Picture 1 (tube, rainbow, N blue to C red):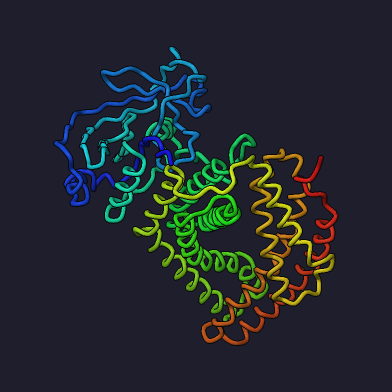
Picture 2 (picture 1 turned 90 degrees about the vertical axis):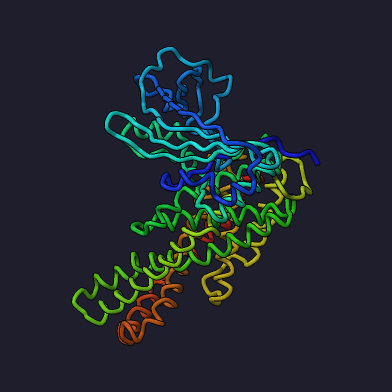
Length: 475
């Protein structure tokens, strides 16, 4: 097997830890030569109209060096990719890029490590006028497997995380007075020219970046969007890893999937309580605004939500989550798996979608009276089809798959509402002693009514879906 090409990975750390980083035992044990340190001044520029930044580019120039055009928003799906030189097709450094966004003033220390890895530590601050933002980055370059192993070992004991933005994008944000832009959000956009293996690599890198981007929002716990988007990205990622198993598989993929499942077990309760408090809980509070028993139940629910968020936050701050992000980066950079199928990704996708569509439709045209367990299983089958259908639809053009996806989404929305009701019933049941048996009884009755209405709407949406023509089978 041909070894993967050399890589350069960048990590971000607390600037307060940077002065002691190169003396850390995990780095000292790998030291292969003396440290060289020198002042470093970097400047980032754009055109006056901001057109370079709009295209994801900036001009970067080190004092004493040549200016270069860099990708502030790298297209690479590698989480830890620093700003890289622009592609030749994007042209040379434009002469009119004279609008200074920010300047980095600090030091760069270079240290050779074992196995051909070079470490560079940048520490200082981004500055623009009176505005200042401390920065510390550790950059490792060298053979892919050695860089990956070194970064992972360091991250086990040092809070090193893949950066959410390049330093060039941080400079753009400081200069524009905004927050850094997300490089990738939502579902990945696939290219029909990709191989099956390259498609999986692209999907993992994209969704790992989405997961990492929303983690700080979930950690803050002030808005439910962070947990919700992390959960969606995680489900898409697990669905993709499992969907590709007939073609691409291996112990490393299976191990990461197991750890994603562990993260899901923490995201799930936090999201369930958010949904309950924002939905059924809000309805109950609005319907019975002066009832002390219902108020007590909602207080108990908020306490459970806070506990779920605290458990999730402890995980997101810890080494397990850092190592998960680095291991996802390893999958992209080192591809430690076995490939069973290397043909066009369209052929693989069409076969997979057909199998899941047949499985979903096997239940027949009537789903309204299915027992709860079978209805729940059907909902999960629909969700699995939806994730892969959304993933692969761009291969045939989004317009072509829009109607099918809309009908599938309508079924999933109503099934999801019915499931939310079932989840809410399970959530409120243990709150009886805290919220009162009367309040939990009212909540469970309310839930049952909502669930029945959602089931009826799901049955109607199901009939429409069964009449849809799968987009991957159209001429």
